[in-house]
Amino acid sequence: MTTAKDLFIIAMDPRPEHAVGQGDLSLALAGAELIDLIGAGAVTVDGDRIVPGGPPAQDDRLLGEAAARLTRQPPYERIEDWLWRRGRDLSATYQAVLEEDGELTRKRSGRLSFGPERVEPVDTPSRRRAAGRWERKDPVLSALASVVGMDGGRPDDEPGLDDEAVTTVVAAVHEAVMELEAVRQRRTIEAAAFANLWRGP
Image (tube, rainbow, N blue to C red):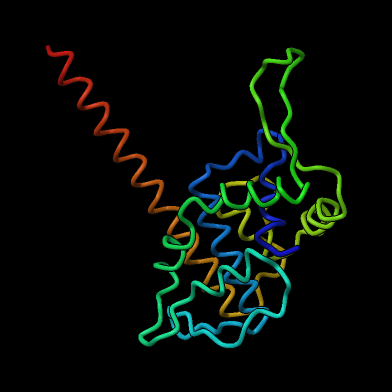
């Protein structure tokens, strides 16, 4: 399992304090992939650019796909641009792959068999591993979860991230999530103004 998959599994927790928007989660998943690629020696970070190295050591389909999509010609891609490009619908991709691998299951909420359907993690070694990282407050997992508003992020008095490249990626994810929220707010304001225009005085 990768940091991205661990983050997705934690985000699927049905508790309200773990509710995360798909767009925010997709950006964080792209950041988690990049952090795993850094850890595998597949990329390095030079300023705000992603410099490709060798292939990722881990045998993970989605991480391999992420590595294959890296820009390998200079000037290399900016971290922010990677997050938006790779992050497009990435949470849906992770959901599909984890369902296919038997890590997620669909359930109906409530007592009625035709109630709303939701996706939940299956009790597998992967889920237990993700839960263990979460309970230990793994710095990388906690930092990414905190960026997307999940409760249980790293307390201020705990040691922070000790890798400059990872810190740079987490900061870029935070900026991208803030930018996405600003777009949402602008659209809400525009929609309200349009509705008022039609209502008239």
